[in-house]
Image 1 (spheres, protein in one colour):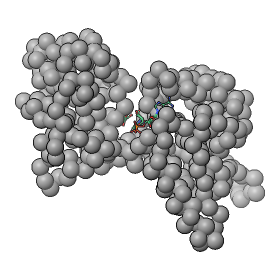
Image 2 (tube, helix red, strand yellow; image 1 turned 180 degrees about the horizontal axis):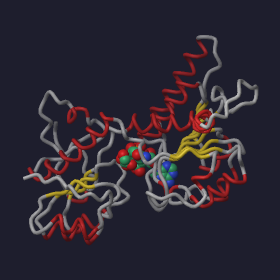
Image 3 (cartoon, rainbow, N blue to C red; image 1 turned 60 degrees about the vertical axis):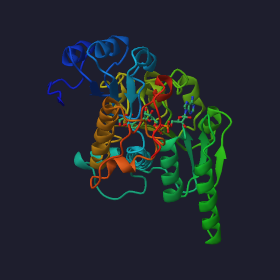
Image 4 (spheres, helix red, strand yellow; image 1 turned 90 degrees about the vertical axis):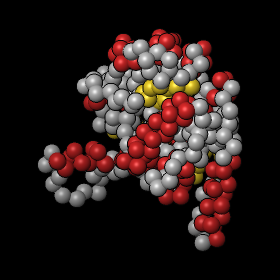
Length: 348
Ligand SMILES: NC(=O)C1=CN([C@@H]2O[C@H](COP(=O)(O)OP(=O)(O)OC[C@H]3O[C@@H](n4cnc5c(N)ncnc54)[C@H](O)[C@@H]3O)[C@@H](O)[C@H]2O)C=CC1
Ligand SMILES: O=C(O)C(=O)CO
């Protein structure tokens, strides 16, 4: 039997979830706002539960070691939100570069008296350098949008080489050159600081873990160009938000586009007053297709585990699960602790 939570609260506490789990529960689909640790996994296990899935790709809200201890499979929803999230990062980059929110507010306030040469002058992206920190699925999709759409050069930093992305930029550069245009270039930075110093627009797309907590702090903000643009569609704590507010105050030409915040749903004091900040409420994956897809993948993760299905071999290849015209494969689309739990892999 499926049960849908109808609580009016947006964010459920651990106690709320324990009472919803009750004495008998096979599996749970949860949100990234919930704190899934020892307490919840032991409660789920006591109720007979074997599966939990975040309706999100990021699972920094989940203590996977605790899930392993109770033998609970942890699912997430990669792939289906890659382009949607990258598009929001691109939207924030453009909005910040061309000061769209400031200009919109100005217009609505009835302040527009007529065209002026210096009215809301912003940054031209063409020929500038886009920096990506965390060039995984979303970071690479964003990089491609900015390189292809705006002919920006790329510098990226990741723990791993983004070979496909590099090949794409090389091929696009050759195409531009063959057409008599300035070719775009790419560089894999050897440190994050290199990206911060060189890029004009920087977008953050790493996972949130110990290595990326407060990755952008006071010292690193100071390394960035005075007129740089910083975008964050990853997780709020990747930026030290108090330091960011100070930096925005001291550098009016520095602009940010933020989808995520350190203490969601709150913003640090002063951020909402900054004209050089664009703030949106964690909507990067909010397209209809993506949200339906995320719900489908999360449900199939839990259902698949309950039915004893193996795990899907390529978690990035999610299309077969999203085709409404055919039955989904008999597999769990993405279980992050499948190896620790020794779950079999699908041969499909
Ligand atoms: N704002 C929103 O609504 C959304 C936010 N996200 C966030 O974006 C994150 C990334 O998602 P995907 O691209 O699908 O994941 P992914 O796993 O494909 O990419 C993450 C990349 O970060 C890199 N990385 C890890 N530690 C790093 C470090 N210390 N320095 C530099 N790079 C590092 C990894 O090597 C990997 O390439 C998610 O974990 C989630 O937190 C994802 C979707 C929507
Ligand atoms: O999927 C995620 O990690 C989100 O933040 C929401 O889509």
